[in-house]
Image 1 (cartoon, rainbow, N blue to C red):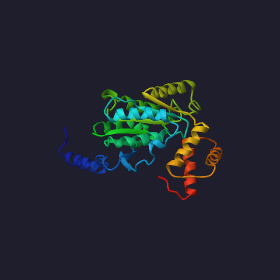
Image 2 (tube, rainbow, N blue to C red; image 1 turned 90 degrees about the vertical axis):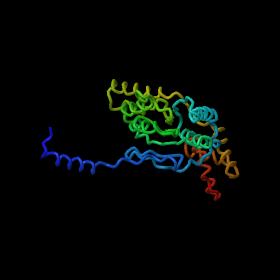
Image 3 (cartoon, rainbow, N blue to C red; image 1 turned 60 degrees about the vertical axis):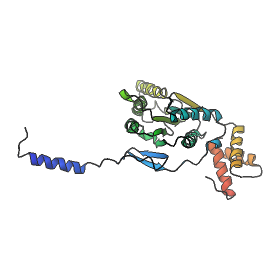
Image 4 (tube, one colour; image 1 turned 30 degrees about the vertical axis):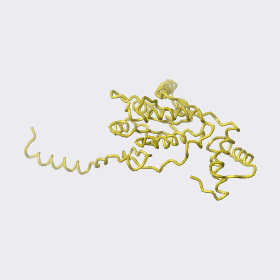
Length: 279
């Protein structure tokens, strides 16, 4: 039983601790934008501007677009859908396709919201999913360039979020990740670690990729697809130049790769040369 002489002191200590405690964050307001960035340190959702690239500008990935859009539309309708892993060569439009498809879907389903998280904040996914579970909106949570540089701890956090614990995964959240690697592991995974520890981490990380029901691969662009992308961009924005194919190929040779990103960078250079604004 507490001494009556201690009661006032304990009350003052409790009041001081309450003053020192950070205030609870205000309820998230998702009416201000369609896309948000999650700040895990502050548990805040920062509005972002709409993604400007139209999905029909992504050329050479028609099969990938069809699979991703069909899955996203099922999710938007409240039907069963799979978390998606978009993997493959850098610059082939993985992140662009996810954002552009989302923007197009919001024209039909305005209750859709996209939340982008940093790959270093994967550990914050379980509480984020719990926070979103009670909301009336439907959320696409996007993690760009996901990999597990820190080993199995981040992999366990992601697996926990995707499985949802005893409550199961939230029905109103679709997780989408992009990665240059199909199994999300860094190339120097085994360096500096014992073989057994590295093998256990590898098994943990590979088991996470198995939690994605939809895997969509993005292979490297060949020359024909690269030039088709350049011509498509040029036609869309009213750009013309002599020997545009030759110039585009010279641009790709200087960059050492052919991809949708390199095609877009060439178009930006051409538009700047001609004084033409782009979105």
